[in-house]
Image (tube, rainbow, N blue to C red):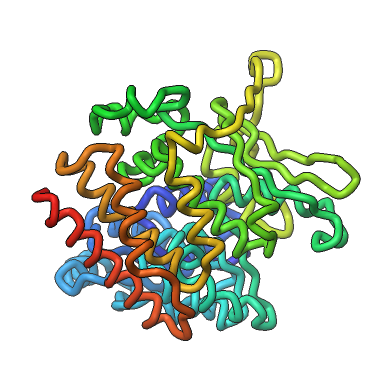
Length: 381
């Protein structure tokens, strides 16, 4: 049995992880669950899978969970339990997930990573931990999982890989000009054509910031230079990413959009799941289209490349500023087109500094949020 810790079990990744585990009950055992404050869902999950430990960050919610569960240890932090697992799924949102990443890799365990901050903001801090004996990092994002799967075909990726190609659906505004996007609504930005995601990530998809941040993640994960990481728009979201090799061959990973596939891949690694999540019906698939992204209209993509090349704290600054801007857009305070303006201003102001600790990364995030809030205030929004 593969012992699994599911950090962030009440979120989208966590819930789908438990679906994958339920599909192969003789293969996986849930050692621990964790959540921030979602009492009802967490209690329901714990009763279903009977973990040994449940971690709840919020003290009030923790007491409620403890009162509702018998025979389960209820604690405030799941990180100490990570060392006992075979694989830890990190589906925690935000910097709260960084401690899970650090604890898992430092203990020499496999990390199934869906927490973006761990690589985008804290890449320089996390990087040396990956050299811990036994430590493995298997990405859960569909694009990076696809790259991971394609790279299995190479015996010497450093020598044989020519470029990584990340695919982007193009979001709900694909093909529209900057003039047409000047007055788009929140509802329009949230109408993603192929994926069902949370509001923040869906807006990031509409600006292509999400794809830009994934470029930074790909660089951190696979050590490929930014000049050798390309983005192409692929509206069907069936080809999840590709790797081009030195001999001109391109290997792609294809499946129907279903996050359970990359989750199952990370759980079962180096084997594969026996459940065919995302299976394609080739007789009805239709055409697959590819096009270059409109970088002039969707400026966030190049902003991410700029931050990635600058390195240091620049990716953390960009991510934090973008988050503040997206929150303001969702609240109706700024236009969709203002999101890259906020990010550009804060990136120019804060720049890049080499972080030496998690605290340095958290401070970069804090100061960037402060600058983004000041930008909004200066415009009376």
